[in-house]
Image 1 (spheres, rainbow, N blue to C red):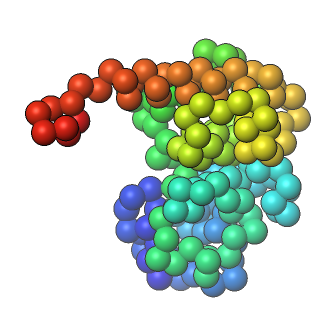
Image 2 (image 1 turned 30 degrees about the horizontal axis):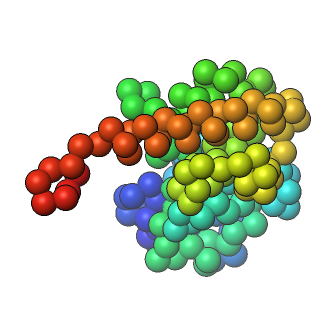
Image 3 (image 1 turned 180 degrees about the vertical axis):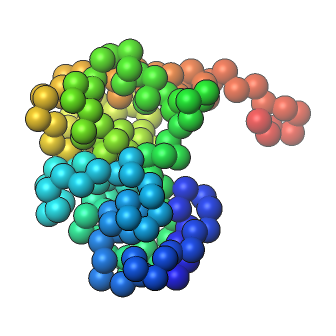
Length: 167
């Protein structure tokens, strides 16, 4: 079986190709993409959040059968060491992480929010970020999401257009 993960086709090993297997275990055990974390196993905590066709989903309850032919994006594709995503930069600047366990899922939920809403209010953030954080850094999460939104807006505004209207 083949999946499209982080923009690349990936062949799944036989031991993780059961259609009922949760996507979380396919990613972690089959593809060695361990940035996605196991938290609760019942879609309550959000540590396992990934994008499925750009939407934030809880991979611990998403069966492999539901992702065939769809684009899966994990935390490994959010940014790089040399070019971090604006959320990752803002996360560090706002000192969001404490223990860090929930952060990959929280970042993926925040990225899905900013992809849809570049100017989220506190209410928008609260509605989109339902991930649980034992360290209680929710006020810092809001600060970081708003800072990343401003950074993304500045990049969009600063992008010059070439003749013909194309960037």
